[in-house]
Every structure is written in structure tokens, then in C-alpha cells.
Length: 91
Image (cartoon, rainbow, N blue to C red; front, side, top):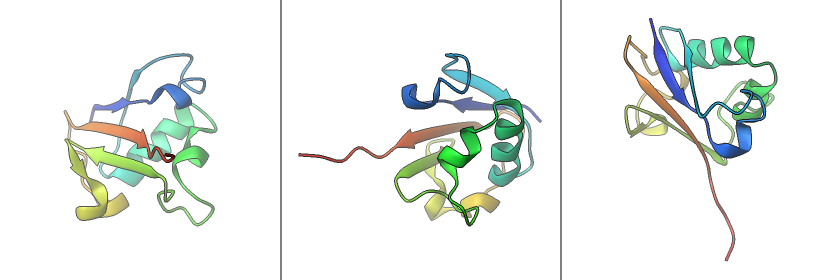
């Protein structure tokens, strides 16, 4: 299954500058695992030491926040678009 992942600028050093990459997986967890297999180190920037989404990283599957879906168990059928968006803080 082909899944498109939109990579934020801050993480593009892991993807050789690519803004969008293709991964596979039945769930978001699978897709992130494949993303990390292809681009080592990027998974640690998205997931914490417990394997959960980092608090200040927002992930969307087809424009829906996964925290309001099934989190890492969110299905990612072929054609799914995943967006990784780091939260911005400051004033």
C-alpha cells in the first residue's frame, strides 16, 4: 500500500531534503516504522521513548488529527496522505 508522507522542513535532513516520501503500512504505526526504516532516525523525532507520538508533534491522516482517531492504530489504506507537523510555541 502506497502512503504519501509530507515531511516538515525541520525533518527533511533525514529525507535528503524531500518534502514528500512514500511508505507502506496498514496502520500509522506501520507507516512510521517503514519511514524510519527508509530514513533512519526520523522515527525518534516523531515517537517518544515509549513508542507514542511526541507531545509536540501533530500527525494527520487525510487531514484528520490522529489523536481524535485511533492514534497509532489509525488505518492507512493505499492512497492515504500523512502529514507530520511540529507544534509551534512562542509568543
